[in-house]
Image (cartoon, rainbow, N blue to C red):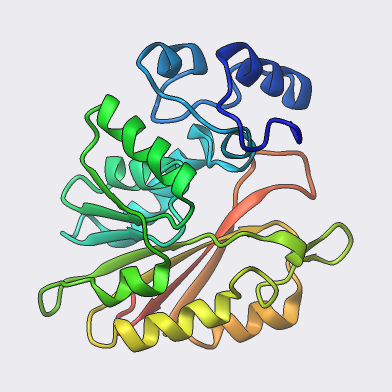
Length: 239
């Protein structure tokens, strides 16, 4: 997929990636649709999006766990690094009283995601801004809870032996939480941080100290040692 990283994929290429990498032609299922279904409806993705996106099985379980914590309270759901927008889609599917807002700085990814959401008539607001600028423009009523999904590029933060270092993502999770603390200083906040089964203990502990309540949840979706998960953390309220 390296040579096709910045190219829009044909359906056969999406299905071949799923088959060759995971033994499943439907691996890149997004927006609740198999590749053949979303492709037929005009959805298109870049090579890197096919590799990096949150597929439906993971987005669904993330949405279910967040909904269990939020208990269907009316809220604003913000995805700081929206990509395909599929995580945001699943969060809103499980939080029907919420409205969604996503930030995507990459112009190519943003343009495709905007068009994909429009093709499927999905009510998600995606903006072509970085997360700092995007948060500065967020306006919510007093007391309204915010759910913030945090999944910055991992880059060199993921070591095959020690695991994921939350201080080495781009930007670091600790830096993102500092920005959130400045921009969202009054409203109840639930942070949903995408993580990996193996985590470097020190950075994980440092992140957890920034919350009033936190919980780590690992999902049984991949082989042992490679399972995805989320770190949930709240500020100004306890579940």
